[in-house]
Image (tube, rainbow, N blue to C red; front, side, top):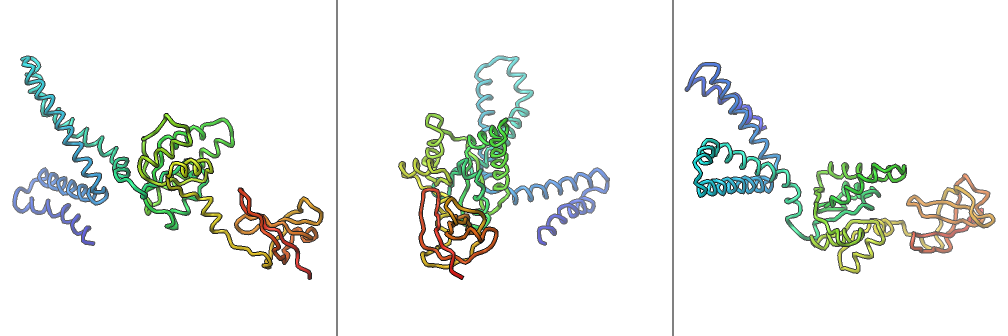
Length: 317
């Protein structure tokens, strides 16, 4: 509410003061209203843009003005009358143009500089496998993944190339990846930054690892090879697949459960069912229960590199 009072005061108060104390003509009132509008826009800009971005823009503008001072010094030292005359006529325009242009370019780069100016574990380098997988969106929305998500520019370029592929499977993966990037940028709780920093001298897997090492950050992935390469180089890894495995419901031998038998197994009288998390359950004597739920008793659990398999028997009725 106080902000709206300030904005209305700027838009209506300035024309009122001009009308009372300065002049009553329409031109003066319009000019005062325009000044009030500039004040409101400046207030909105300052509130919506982070302080770091404003500081970067100011620094860029100072660099632009420093370039103008350098040009002015060079022209002065040259001592060519025609050049001196031309420069004297346009030096003000040159100073303003260089200052504004440098400040504007700094604002365009501010998002990249701001997010990666600090190093440490708050920087989460996201590889292509984690983006295409999509579960990273749920982790961010629920608050389990915090910090700054850093998406390398070469990952976005790969996704764009996949989205333009003639192969339907690759095209679908690329489009899904680009859609996940857009959804991540819409999550306000977790900032998403991009970086053009790259290490082309190393292989595709090591590029992400080298980038995470450069920023002292962590890697978010589901790729086993990236995970292995990062561990070798002592780079912290947040593997979404490992998290999913750790959160799977604990099932112990001898425990009873009710499960829907979906299809027949490889062996005679076997049936296959699945837990809610996708874990396969091989049930002996469940062939006659296909398409129905059955009460089963777990007798063994097999842990494999691709996940868990549970072996059970139908309980006697």
